[in-house]
Length: 221
Length: 258
Image (cartoon, rainbow over all chains, first blue to last red; front, side, top):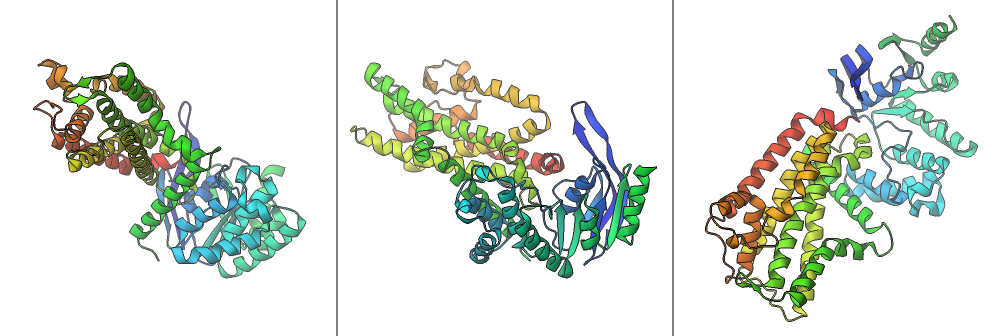
């Protein structure tokens, strides 16, 4: 269960504090619920995801996580370009668990990513598809109660995308999911509940279709 | 579930190995440059003092004099500057909730201390080939003064890292202030040649205290000023570390947000 209570967020800008991105969000996400975050660019979807993931702190209010929450999967933010895929993977395995689990996880990641010998090469030499394969494989190697995903499922070539979507579907059945996506089909496929972010406010919809409808109506008007 | 302490320990281990691998894997023969970098300055001045200027400084061989001063100084300054820059250098890692800004600072201090330790041993071994007596007369004093200087560097690094992240201009000012430290810490001259009352002012600098004790422990024939105090060095280091940790705790929210 994740409890978001009266969360405000604004960023520092060059000229003092910037404008409020999120203004007084309060909601509770029950466990085993798949939530889609919807909103236009700059509405604060990624910001909210980062706050839920505990990477960033709200300016006011609080986010309480009463379960194991993943880092926002997707962009390879935590990968260091000059280190090899293996070294990066090992680092993430090390901070996430006990020493004795590392070996199996490394093997799983290497097998799932299917990037062959590039696993030993520096990450900066990777193509964006290879990078996405690696980040996706890494995120699958750990068991979380809730997975956060930021535009994750649209990565890699057709073969990998199919595999990734299947893996993601299996995941969604056993764990909670909070995802940001601009692809309505992806959202409909994975999510039951929708949160529409608009003007710093969050609107909760019990059905993702309703959330998508309101979002579409807001910009077709 | 792991306890907080277990998580911290695994983060430290992971960060240490990551940083070490990173330093060792950039460029050809990176390990060589890694050792040479802190030593190049020392080596150059040692050659200067050994061949050109060779004489006894304040009761100690000139080469040993300059070497101990510079090694002590670099132990401090490298730790401090590396720590200072560690938060901004590792900002991508805060994607993982487990990694806190203070972890990156502490790990860099440990790594820098480790590199300096190896550099010092290599240099002493090399110097022993030239028939210098590199075994300190009072080993514990040497170890303690290096430890104190390292802790002082870590304390400064902790404080500076917060200051620099919150107000970037502070970083520029610190860099300006650190530069004269080379000249007012008694690296190129023994503290004894400074007349009173100025010597008391000089010895307010904890770095100068550390360097004098380091030399005095290396050879008992070196004259150290009576006001030199190891406790002062450690006291300053502990106060700075405490202050730095408190700052990191107070501003942890601001530090980890980009």
